[in-house]
Length: 123
View 1 (cartoon, rainbow, N blue to C red):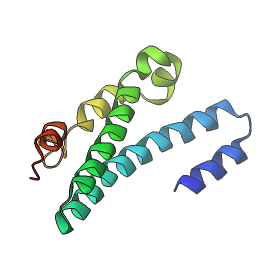
View 2: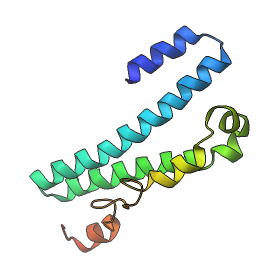
View 3: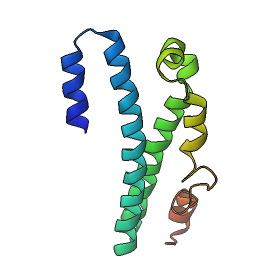
View 4: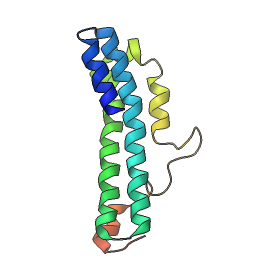
């Protein structure tokens, strides 16, 4: 999908409308990709528990958190894009930290990984 989005951006050239819709598609894709990377790191950790594997979970969570922060700030940072292309931004942001409409993110998102690493504990 990353390569397809890149190809679409090249094909769009300078068409701002097309580029904005591609940007919106990339946001949706990145949300899924970054969430999946956390779960993938967790699955690898469960297969072979180690401090390094736990750190990979922490890194994936931090990368996803940076994405969430970036998306949350879009109305301030790029109000025109948010208004014209991302009408459901508020709803999207509310769902970023939920596995579905009513269930918050579970393990490993709920782990206090920094504390676990400091204490030398593996969950």
